Image (tube, rainbow, N blue to C red):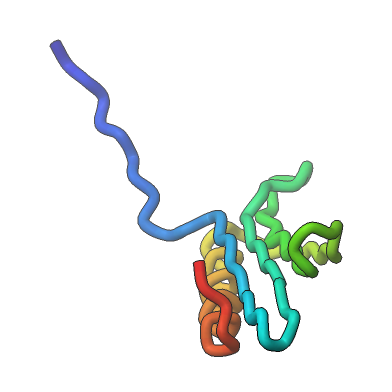
Length: 86
């Protein structure tokens, strides 16, 4: 029997990060995800705010998925330097 190979994701398309510091009363979240829009372009959806609240959202459109993933990786690195963890 032949089984079709399973394609594994090498680059993340969803990242969820948190920054919690009880001494400063800080409980924040930051989410990044890659989604397709109706025109076939890749969109980087950014959501952030205080844990337990709605927060804010921003959508950046990119011509292809590769550029959107590159933007996601750069933003995740910046957030890690600022103290966010996955």
